[in-house]
Length: 178
Image 1 (cartoon, rainbow, N blue to C red):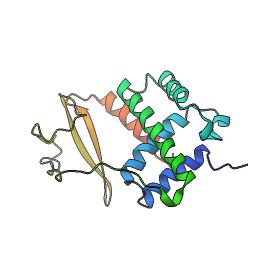
Image 2 (cartoon, rainbow, N blue to C red; image 1 turned 90 degrees about the vertical axis):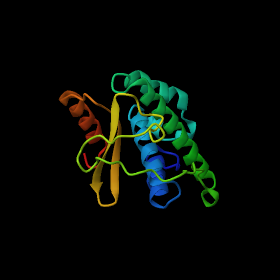
Image 3 (cartoon, helix red, strand yellow; image 1 turned 180 degrees about the horizontal axis):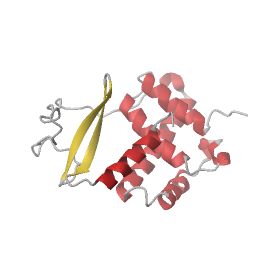
Image 4 (cartoon, one colour; image 1 turned 45 degrees about the horizontal axis):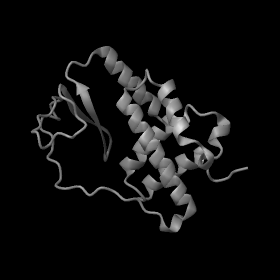
C-alpha cells in the first residue's frame, strides 16, 4: 500500500520540483544524486516510509559503507543534501499549495572562463575562485546537450588515466538508463 512517503515518492518529488521550477533544477539534481546514494544503502523495507526513517543512522551507514568511494567532505555533503531533500519532501507532502524553497541570491554574473574552447584550464583571479576549489586543481565545463553544461571542479592538475576512469565510472553510475 502506497503511503506517499516512499523512496520512489521522494525521487519523484525531486524530479517534479526541478521540472516545475519549485526549486532550481541544479539544486534538485544535486539533491537527487545525494538521495540516490543514501537510498542505495537502505533495505527495501526502510524505503517504504521515509517519514519514519532515522536520517542520522542512514547517513552514518552511507559513510561506513561507502567510505572508500568518496572523500570525507563528499560524504558529509551527501548527508547534508539527503537531509535537506527529505526535509523539503516532507514539507511539500504536508502542504503542496504553499511549498516554496528559499534560494541564495546571486550577486554579479560570473565572467566567462577564457580557455574553455581550447580545452585548457581557465585562469581565475582570487575573487572568482569558488570557496570549494582547492589549490593545484582547476574546473572545466562539458556541454552535455543543448542548453546543459556540466562543470567539474577540483580536477587535479596532474590527473592520471586511472583517476579519470574512476570519475567516468562514477558518472556512468548516475545515468538513469544504465
